[in-house]
Length: 229
Image 1 (cartoon, rainbow, N blue to C red):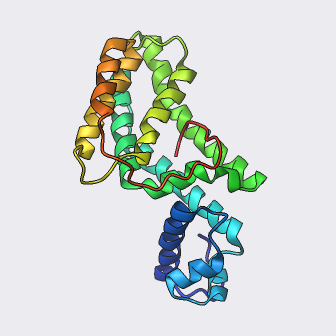
Image 2: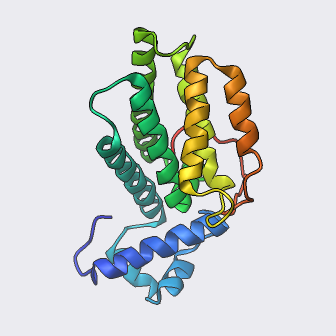
């Protein structure tokens, strides 16, 4: 978040971020007021403007910051070389672990796209498509080398991301499944899809559908686009 002259420091900025994430995840962007946010942090409402100019800028900064972190972390995790299967495995393991660790950011990135103004929305959608493209490139390579049996890699990309990103709406930390367990199950399901092994995919789905209940409040205020978050 860009600091404006007179701001009181990075610790206050981080506290504002954390409080904003929690309030938006719980109540929604429209229902969260800046007065409520300031009270949560323990500062005067006017002090918020040392860190952002208005509520829309705050939301955009939260979502954009999440997407920048997501891209940087993926680039660090992905194998630069290797088989398509190895790279798809690494992608899946990364995506699962990241989304389990940051459920509020992921949830807000999905649910509050509709609250962004047009220019801000366009910037975030472009970042989401860049992320999708990284997975799509792996699938395209795997189909070209014969490792994967996919009729439509674009549809497979969206299906995989929808399946993996949905974890944050039901996964409960400390429940029956650990992050390692989730990675193993979902990697098997994703590879089965890529290889065209529908029986293995169904077997993996049956293992995963007995998961623990919701960890993050899910507010469905309209249709969400499957994809990145």
